[in-house]
Image 1 (cartoon, rainbow, N blue to C red):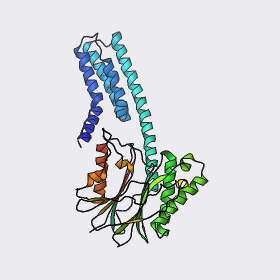
Image 2: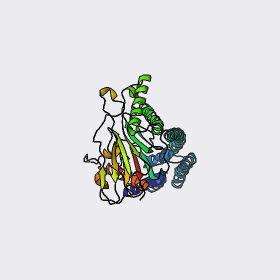
Image 3: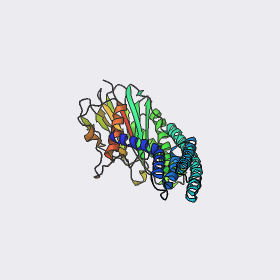
Image 4: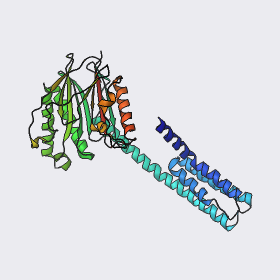
Length: 361
């Protein structure tokens, strides 16, 4: 909150900076001998306004600057002197240039906004937010991009209710750019189909593996051919009070209990990430854990656990959550995302997906 307050004050100061420059220039020109000039302050005023204000605001700032310059020169009786005329012409020229700069900035902003809208639409299509309640469980998902205004990347998630229970996937595709996005689309598409059709979680994992293998064979893209994805799959059978986990090289989920205890759910039989089948074959094995009422299952990507502070220390979600009251899933994820950003000084080095599923008491 303190950092946000400082940012807000800085933005407010920048917004009024053109007017402060204008006032300072007027007083300087009026109170100093005629051989001293406030031309640098007057020329800076419309230039500073150009990227900050609207076109109308930039025009008004330029007009106001020219009028102030003329008023000061009239007051001092030097309107027609060579230095005064030069200063006035300079300010008029800079004011016109400021309007042109403003037009360019606004056009670039509109293009960026259009690209942002396209990115948002792509993310909603590939990674739609799940409803707040599925199969009797309360669910929340949060995607935090490492770069501001960046949207879809290599992190992925999906939640699906199926005849076999609620099935989840959270994962992280190697690399960035369109290759990673293509791999995300492949994994999510295969998961949604397999979650409905396959009777076991192990079979779902194998379907994902085969989907990436087929795509690698079909495409010439280096990003696809050399890519892999770490994923964790979870299955919560209806009414059984258990959770089954298949982990393919991903950070282990956490089970948060109502009394503040936290259980890490590591893979006792680890398997290679998806897309690395050429290196060896390890059979997938779903491991069962109790999932009592009031508990919350937390799945996340390494953008959370690899957030570092100034001393290089990693954020440890298990240690941070132990002994704390567990809020509802949405509030939990908001708190975790905020803590990770504060821990890393406000700059995440990797995208972060957080998914929380709570079983009501």
